[in-house]
Amino acid sequence: MNILLLSMPDSFEHMPEVVVRMPNGALSSLAGNVDAHHEVAIADLILVQRQVRETVERLVNQLKPDVVGLSVMTFQRQTAKKIIALIRTLHPAAQIVAGGYDPSLAPEAFMNAFDRSVDFIVRGEGEITFRQLLRSIENHGEFDGIAGLSYRRDGRVFHNPERQVSSLEGGDIRLPNRKARVLCGYTLLGKQVDVVETSRGCTFDCSFCSIIEMRGRNFHTYSFDRVLADIRDAREQGARAIFIVDDNVTLNVSRFEALCQAIIDAGLNSIDYIVQAMTSAIANHGETLAPIMRRAGFRYIFLGIENILENDLAFLRATSKNTKREDGRKSNATIKAIDYLHKNKMYVVGGLIVGNPDDTRESIEANLEFARHYIDWPYIQHPTPYPRTPMTKDFRERGLIINETLQEYDGTTAVVRTEHMSAEEVEFMRWKAERWMKARHFPFALLHDRLFMLRNIRRIFAHTFRGSSIRSMLGLEDERRAFERYRAIRQVERAYL
Ligand code: B12
Ligand code: SF4
Image (cartoon, rainbow, N blue to C red; front, side, top):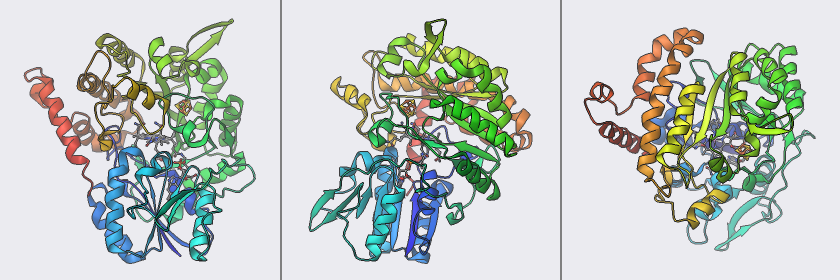
C-alpha cells in the first residue's frame, strides 16, 4: 500500500525557521517498522509552513495514499483537523490514522460516532500497532485484536485495550527509515539536524508532563549497537547535529556515561549533540559525567530547571529531580549543574516554567533574574493544561484556565492566570525579558557557527525582536504596544492553511 505520514506545520516562538527545523522522530520510526512491501513517504510539514495546502495537495495527488497518518500535539489539533478535511476532499478513499500525544490523550476530540474525522487512532507507542493496523486494512481483517487502537464501526467507536510499552531490547522496534522523507531543509544553526532515540520513558511524574499518562512510569533502553547504528544512519543521510529526543536519558547516569564513551570510541563525536537533562543528574554526577559528555560532542544541554522557587517546584512536582545530595544534605541542584556544564564548555538551554497558580510579579521576576545570570539560552514557558496531566486538573479546579483556544497551547502563550496576575501580564513579563537574554547569546553562537551567524544574524535578530521597533527598544514607545504587535504576528502565523 501507499502510506503518507505527515507531521503538523505548527511551531512555537522558540523555533524560528532560520535556526531550527527538526524532523519528527515518530514518523521515521513508524516508517522503519511497517512491512517492507509498503511504499512510505514522510512529509514534515514544518518545512513548508507557508505552503501547507499546496504541499498536501501535491503529495496526495501524486501518491494517492491508501493510508495517511498524522502525528499531532495538542496545539496542532486545529491544523490537523483542517488537513484531514483537505485530504478527505482530495482523496476520499484514503484511510486516515492519527497518532501522537494529542490523539492518544484526547481520542474523543478526533473520533466520535457522528462524523468521519479520522478512521483510526493509534494510542501510545505506535510502531507495532501501526504495523498490525496496516496488515488488517490490507487484508480486510478485523481490528478488535489490535491493542492500542481506536476505531469506528457501525456508527460506534471502539477503544481496544492499551498496548503494553515495548521493552526496546528484543529488536521488535527496527531502526527508523529516514530515506522515506520527501521534503528537505532540516537545520539547527545551519547544520543539518536529525533526531535519535536511545531510550523511552521516565519514572518521575512532573505534573505538567504528558509522559506518564501516555506510557506509565517506566524506562526502557535500546542497545548501544542499535543507537550507534542509528547515529551512523543519520550521519550518512547528512546530519551533522543530532538531538537525542529521549524523555529522560539522565535517569540512568552510568548508562549515559557509557553511551558517551561508546560514541567517542565509535568516532561519532564530531557531531554536535543536543540533549535534555535533569539538573539533579548533572549536579550529583557532574564531576565525571560533564567531561565525558563534552568529549562525546554534547554542546547544548536543555536543563529542566522548571523553577527556582521551592513552592513552584512543589506545584510542578519537580522537586526531587532538581535536588542535589551532598553529605546527607539536600539542596537545589540547578546552580551546581550549570557550573559543571559551563566548566566543560557546554551551553545551557534553561527550561523554566513561570505563571504557576501562586506566582506573583516578584516570584516571576526572581526566575527571570536567575535566567539572566545563569543560563545561556532561555526556554521559558508558561504552564499549559494539556489533556490528562495532573496540572490540568489543578488549574481547572482552581478556575485559572482563561483560554480554551488550543492553537495557543504552545507553551509561550499564557493560557492560565495566577491567583495574583492576569495571564497577559505573565506573558508580557516573560516576553519582555527573554528577547534580551537571547540576544546576549548571539556573540557566543557566532564563535562556533561563524558563517551561519554572519549570514543570518539580521533574520535571527528580527525574529527575536518581532513586534519591537527602534523606538520601543529605546524606551520612546510603550513596550506593551510592541507586545501587542508581537501577539498579532503570532496570531496570523497560526493560520497554516
Ligand atoms: C523531543 C521533544 C521535542 C523536541 C522536538 C524534536 C522533534 N522534531 O521531534 C523539541 C524540543 C523541539 C520540542 C518542542 C516542543 N514540544 Co516537545 N517533546 C519532545 C519529547 C521530549 C520527545 C518526543 C519524541 O520525539 N519522542 C520519540 C518519538 C518516537 O515518540 P513519540 O513522539 O511519542 O511518538 C510515538 C507515539 O506517540 C506514536 N505516534 C506519534 N505520532 C504518530 C503518528 C501516527 C500516524 C501513528 C500511527 C503513531 C504516532 O508512535 C510513535 C512511536 O512509538 C516529548 C516528551 C517528553 N517527555 O517531554 C515532548 C512533547 C512531545 N513536547 C510537547 C510540546 C508541547 C512541545 C512544544 C509545544 C513546547 C512545549 N510547550 O513544551 C514544542 C513544539 C515544537 C514545535 N513544533 O514548534 C509535549 C506535547 C504535549 C501535548 N499534549 O501536545 C510533550 C509530550 C512534552 C510535554 N509537555 O508533556 N519537543
Ligand atoms: S523528568 Fe522530564 S520526562 Fe520525566 S516526568 Fe518530568 S518533565 Fe516529564
